Length: 339
Image 1 (spheres, rainbow, N blue to C red):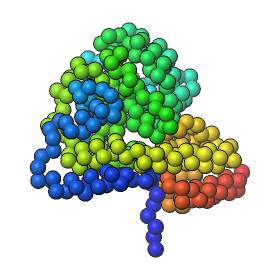
Image 2 (image 1 turned 90 degrees about the vertical axis):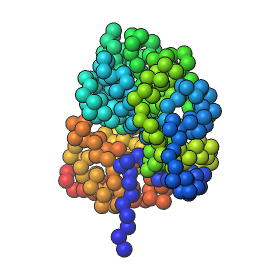
Image 3 (image 1 turned 30 degrees about the vertical axis):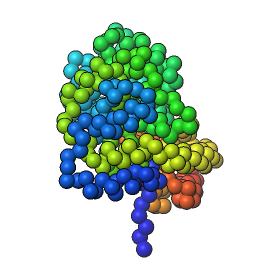
Image 4 (image 1 turned 135 degrees about the vertical axis):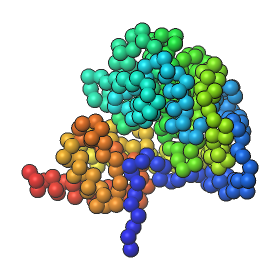
């Protein structure tokens, strides 16, 4: 019998959707004969309640990827698109698809681009700056004070987009949503694809000032979020038990992984989104990737993108941890025999 591979490459929640979302998805089958709400109004009301912001400060999208595209179309025409060289690659990819000018900023240390690095680069330029917080794949977390400092350093025509795709995995909230009333040039992105386990139905949202949301909304197509996504997302917002289980698993995963990699003296990220990133040389990265694959685990080898050895391993269920140990033992043996 051939066992299915374990996806530790895509940053999915291995627990899948919560029971409340599953029930909502089942109930939505009976609604398929009608169009979804044009503006996802029902979902927007629940986001408004849980995030404590006004309805007209929210826009819902077909995943946060659609929202990134809409933001770039709305604000990237007369602005340089700026992002972290060691952050989420989707920002530059979508900007390039829209034929925008893209600049990637890096600091003196790889995977540790600081707020001051961005401030030094932007100076008085008009920019559309994307910052993932926590960062992917580095896992770095910028504090609220750092976000405020960066926002206030930008000129009045610039927009700062904080992508919080992994914020729900953290035990305490470090969200920038509380800043949108005070800092009108800040947009905060959230997704239901990660901690909520709804990657397959595509739902995300952005929170900002009313003026910024109105401009983004002018580029949005009608019926952009389907009935399944809207109803499953509403249920997910209130499934605190599922979120608690996910955070518990994340904490256990990081403790286990850190211990395993520390034993082999492999450098790795130390913060706590739903993945851990390894920093090794390119040859070792290819070997380690194959060792994981031999044990049915798919990992993301990002070495070609970053020109050095980088492997990101996403959250997996606890009953598969032994496969990680087997993979590392195999890697250790092969590395020792090669010396």
